[in-house]
Image: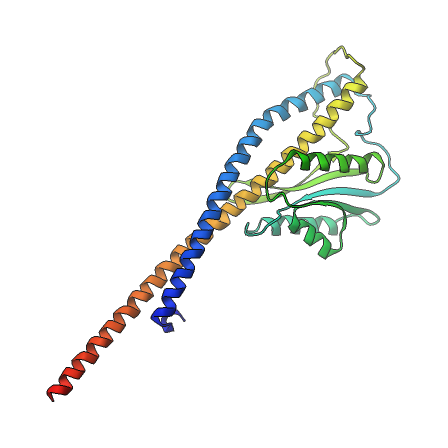
Length: 287
């Protein structure tokens, strides 16, 4: 109990809590700065992504019978590739727990005879999949919530290679999105085979042939969708860490208030005790 501690022990605890509060406050500010920067990147990229998706939909509507490996095909393998995105570090509240629990549920619900191969982003996801015995095809760590195009390009290249070689019938991305009310919602979206939004057919003149245009366009569409998924996941991570560190800082403030109050009481008690000892000594001398 704090009340049973000596004044020196209470002062030591106060210094310890103050140091902890400084660390959590600094981490909250860093995460908030990263969050703001990531949101700006996502907001600017979403404009490009929407225009790209619209162009893809228009070309697909104009040539609905066009053939491409990224469109649905029959495969002899019943395996699915899943890109799982989590964090490299902790101290981000329930972010990793919710995401990894969702993956466990996804694996449990998988149909008999089918298997999952994971492309893992983040050390926490890698350790979880290894502990559970899931098949890890490739892993990407060390990004610590910082988006980089080389991560997106590596993911796109590795997963498209699996799909082109018929190692997987489809490829999906499992990532976290931040929802209102401080809630985090795990999402699983399909990226291969590619699906297009339904748009009215229009007449276009294609130069060169539609197949060449579609091949270049689909690679850009796939890269854009992966970038959106990565950015939203990293935004959720920074949001979760900022919230967790903010709550830790508030807890430290409340704990400090209690410790300071206890310190003052102990100090007052010591002073009262000393006064009583002096009065008692004086009375003893008089007697």
